[in-house]
Amino acid sequence: MLWTKAQKRTREIAIQRSQEEFATVPHTFIFSRGQVGLNVHQLITDLRRIMEPYTARNLKVQKKNLLKDFVSVAGPLGVTHFLVFTKTSTSVNFKVARLPRGPTLTFKVHRVSVSVRVSDRIFIVRTVAQGQL
Image (cartoon, rainbow, N blue to C red):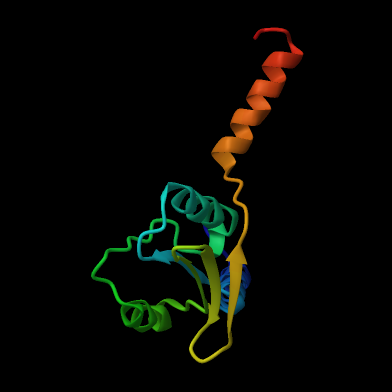
C-alpha cells in the first residue's frame, strides 16, 4: 500500500506523540527486600498486574541485588517510583519511593487479600448458591 506524504507525516507525528505521552507517565519497579513470605510475594504479583502497562512485570530480584543496583538501572529505563515490601518480626511494611530524590512514604500492612484467595471465595460462593457442595 502506498502512503502519501501527508499520511506519512501524520503517522510520524502520532508515533512521536504517543512516545512522549508514554515517557511522561510514571513507571514503577515493584519488589521486596529480604524474606517476606508467600502472601507478600503473591501481593507483589497482583500489584504488578494492576499497574501493568507502566511497571516491570517480570522483574527478577536476587539476594545479591542492592538498592543501588535498582537505582542505577531505573534512570535509563525511565522508572520514577519504587514500591518496596519489607518484613520485620512484627509487621510487613510497604514503601513508596520517588526517584531520584523524592520523598519516601512508609506504610504498615495490616491485612492482605490476594487475588487467588478472592477468586477461591467467589468460586465457593457460586457452588454453594448452585447447590453443588
